[in-house]
Length: 65
Image 1: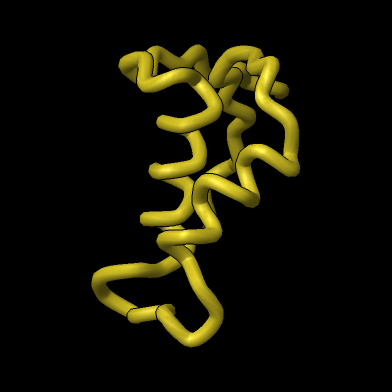
Image 2 (image 1 turned 180 degrees about the vertical axis):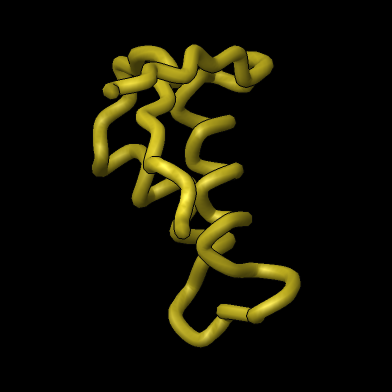
């Protein structure tokens, strides 16, 4: 049986979606996907780093049972 999904609070940002798209679009261009080296996990890692202004990721796991 699969683990129960968790919600993880990562923080707030003042950065707009357009700014995110502009900055990360340079690195994640159409056709640059690589299953091992440049995938959805690497995009999420970069997006969080950018959105949280390069702060160390300190997260709170919120458990909804």
